[in-house]
Length: 202
Figure 1: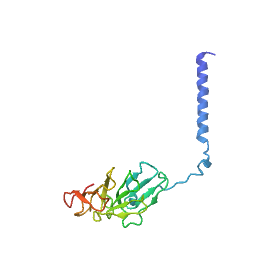
Figure 2: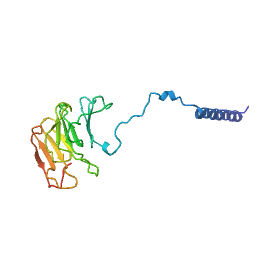
Figure 3: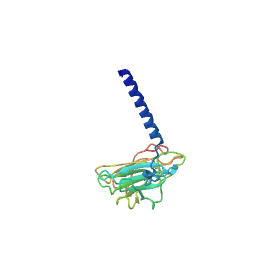
Figure 4: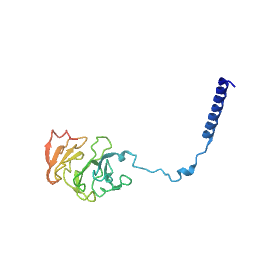
């Protein structure tokens, strides 16, 4: 048999084998028992109220995560986000705009209430809150009339120093806008940047 005929025969056999394999694969049934242990689960609200405003993580233990929700309060995970528990439900507001963990002492957590993303469905807050026990309990520490706080920056060397950007009301003037600083852990606040009652900080 010539080389050309052998090559032709080889190509014919290879093509038939490929077609047979494709036909077998296309008609093979899937073993549904492989999926018996799998169930769909919700990993968070999908409606407008489910917006997440802020996430912060304890740097020394990344299993500890805090999440601030636009209208759902503050949530804490201690198992690397496998589960979350609400820790802010006893407060008088549920809208969160800012959250900051003191990385030198992660038991100290600051929360700015009031979502800072202007929109028709946004909710208002009631000032700054602080926890000194890792989120178990909270104390309101000022700026109650700011309505929306969108950023908190902590001094990395002094746990009593914090900066807060207050956006204020959305649709009208507000005198409690601007950039604030505390040097005594939130007992008193100094406004260190202010333009006017229609200009907020964020």
